Amino acid sequence: MRTLWRAGRLLVPALLATLALLGALGASAATINSGDLAPGLQIPAQSRPGPDFDVERATAAYLALLSPGQRARSDAYFEGGYAMQLGGLVYGLALAALLLGSGLSVRMRDLAGRVSARPWLRTWIYAALFLLAYFALALPWSIYEGFVREHRYGLATQGFADWMLDALKGLAVSLVAVPPALVAVYAAVRRAGARWWLWAGAIACVFLVLTMVLFPVYVAPLFNDYKPLREGPVREAVLSLARANGIPSAQVVEFDASRQTTRISANVAGLGATARVALNDNLLDRTSLPEIKAVLGHEMGHYVLNHAVRLTVYFGLVLTLAFGLTHLALDAALARLGGRLRLQGRSDPAALPLAVAIVSLVLFLATPLMNSIVRQAEAEADAYGLNAAREPHGFAMVAMRLSTYRKIHPAAWEEAVFFDHPSGYTRVREAMVWLKENPGNPTANAPLPR
Image 1: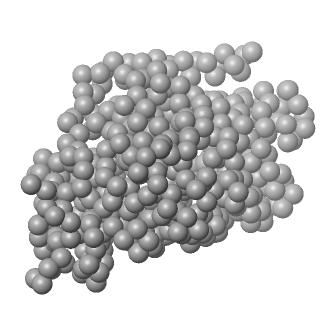
Image 2: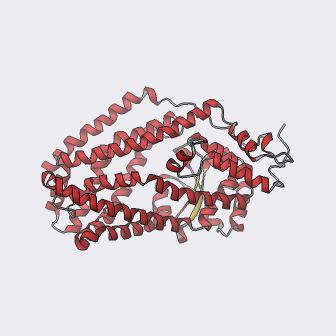
C-alpha cells in the first residue's frame, strides 16, 4: 500500500497538470480553417495532354491549386512536427529520469516481487505497472500532441471524452499485448546473457507478425466500425479493380474514420487470411471516383507486392541493431549509475525505463533510415497504383488533398530525412510523367467542366 501511495503522489499531480493544460490551452485550441480543397476532381488546363504538354508546367499547375494561406498552413503543421518529434523524445527521456530518480520504478519492482517470486510473473506485473505509470505521466504531452494540436489545424473531429476513451482503449490493448512480449525479452536477458539482444530482435519480429495478423480482427474494430463497401457505382468500380488485381472483394472494406479525423486515407492491414484493404469514409464521401481508384490502386500495390512481409523483415533487422546498441549503452549506464539507482543489473525489470530511454534515442537517430525504408515501399506502391488504376489525375488530386497535413514541396534533404512517403510534389510529378507516356487517358481527355 505504501508503494501505491508513493506512486499516487507522482501520478496525481500529472493528472492535475493535464487538466490545467486543457484549461490553459482552451482558448488557443480554436480550429484553424482547414482550407481543404473543394470536393471533386480538379484538372488544371495546363495539366491536360496535348502537343505542348510539359511535365514541369503540369506539375506546377497542380501545386498552384493551393492558395498561399493553405500552403503556409500545411508547411506550419508539418514543420511543427519536426519539433514535436524532438519534444516527444525529450519528454520521454524526462519521464524515464523521473521514474528512475524518484525510485518509483524500484518500488514497482519491489511490489511485483512481493506479489510473486516467479521471474516471469514479477516481470509481467512490473510491465503492467510501468504502462499505467507511463500513460498517466505522458498524458499532458499526449493530449497536446494528439488532441489540442490536431484540433487547432482542423484535423480532428472528436470531443475530448471520445478522444480519451480511445486513448484508454489503446492503453487496454497495451496492457494485454506488451507484458507477454517483455516477459519473453527478460527471459532472454536472463538465459542468453550478453547475447540477449539477438533474441530480443527475434522476439520483436514474432511480435510484429502477430500484431499484423491479429490487428484487423481484434484491435481495429475497437476504434472504428469496419463493413463491406456501400452499394453503388463506386463499389462496383472499386471491386472490379480489386478483382482485376487478384484481391478478393471480401477483403476490400470501409471504416468510419470521420468520427475521429478529417483526413482522407486508406490502408492495408493484416497478413495472410486477415489481410484487407480498407478505405475511410472521408475518402468515399469527399473525393471523386478517379481519386478513389487511384488510392485503391496504391493500396493494392502494398498488398500484391507483399510489403507487409518485407517491412517486417526490415524493421526486425533495424530493431535488432537498436537492441544491440542498447545492450552496450545499458551495461555502461548500469555500471555507472546502477548502484545509485538501486538497479540490480540488466535483468532487473526496474531498469526498464533506462532501457526504453536508450532504445528511444537510438530509434530517434535512426529516423531517416526508417523513413527511407517506408518511403521506398510507398514509391513502389505509387508506381503500381498508377499502372493498375490508370488515373493520373486522381492520383495527383489525392496528393494535393494530402497537403492538408503534409508539406507539399520540401527540399530534397528534408524529404530524405523527415518524409516516410514521397512528397506531394514528387507524387504529382510522377503522375504527370505517367500521363505524358499515356496521353490517351480517358479521365485526362474528358471535357472541361463549364
